[in-house]
Length: 306
Image 1 (cartoon, rainbow, N blue to C red):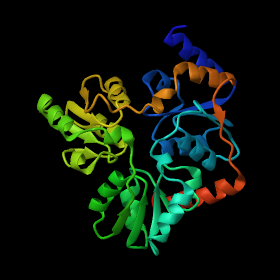
Image 2: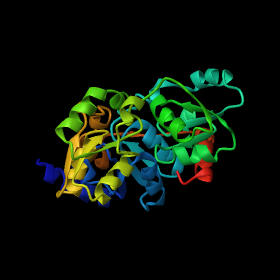
Image 3: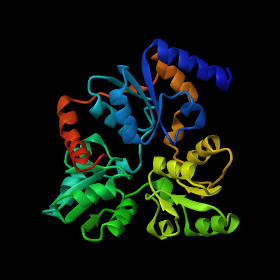
């Protein structure tokens, strides 16, 4: 089958079987084109909660599918590829955080959305990369323990200097791979380009950015900007998506190695097999786990818009 034939069959089957297909923006272009919604993880979860379909296919990684299930516990949620995890989410578990909390009494524990549902049960507030600064400013406590990404945490600390923010040494292996030399080389090759970067990159790299924001924030900035050239400092799928969205502009990858292998684990054929009901993994969570993990998400929504 050709790519177009596969896509047409997925579109036909998802309508026939009443399946809502979600694709994280780091998915490949062929998958994004058959999705009902494309975006950041939490935004996709909110879209799924509003969708009429009672079966949701998450083309992303495990913590994203868990979040979909937490916001739509009555729906059947499928993870497109069972091996697609998130190395950052797997860097700390519930027991490790409980031990860490003992070293920081009186601190409000803030979890990045890129964490497991189990970990969220022992956190106070959840944040996304786009909402983190606003929500941490709104927390009625000057002492914050932020987990697990020390790079995003460092960026937040710079934006909210009035808070005392303790960090653990975790982060995204994909974004951490970007080197300062790659930034300098990119700026030399493309002197007229703006550098757009994700805050999961290391602080010594982020300082060069013209704009720092979430995946969808980066895409929106590039689409609305009057400038014509951009170097993209996040997963390289975004370069291709922007090339399709803005064919009159030029987009360059900051690093050829900025590729999330877990996101790329899902193929278009996987999506077809999932909508057939022959592949993927259903996310099953107890009522207690959903209830306890949702508390920090509900607190995020109370303190900001997520």
